[in-house]
Structures are given as C-alpha cells and as structure tokens.
Image 1 (spheres, rainbow, N blue to C red):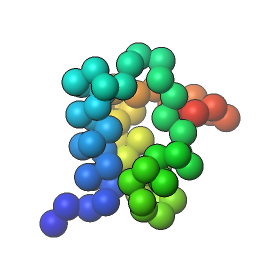
Image 2: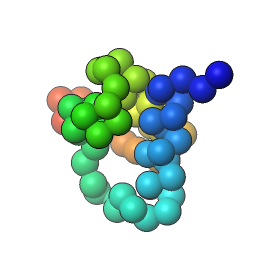
Image 3: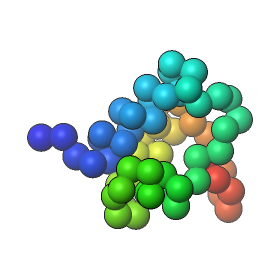
Image 4: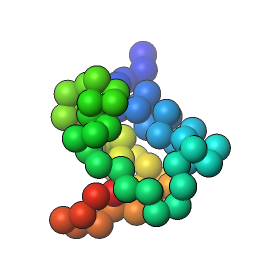
Length: 64
C-alpha cells in the first residue's frame, strides 16, 4: 500500500529528475501541502526521504 508521503516523494522526485523543478528552487512545505491536498505530516516526511536520497538539501530555518 502506498502512503501519502511516498506518493508525494515520488511526484517531487519525478519533478526534480525530469527538470520540472530546477536546482535552487525552494520547496515550501505549506505550498506543497496545499498542492498535494494533504495534511502537514506527509510533506516533511517526503522531503526527508528526498534529502536522504540526495535529491534535495534541507537547511535549518529555511525552506528545502
């Protein structure tokens, strides 16, 4: 069974790999929450998974 965080991660990863999201684009959690129409929990989980995979860089007190 696919989780919302997993689906969000896959959609974001596709956007990064395909070039829809350019290097340096900021990923704002509130905006992504609205875009994916999910609660606040799945988006940070998806971003952590993308950071672990090396696709995004997370900076404290800044957007991803």
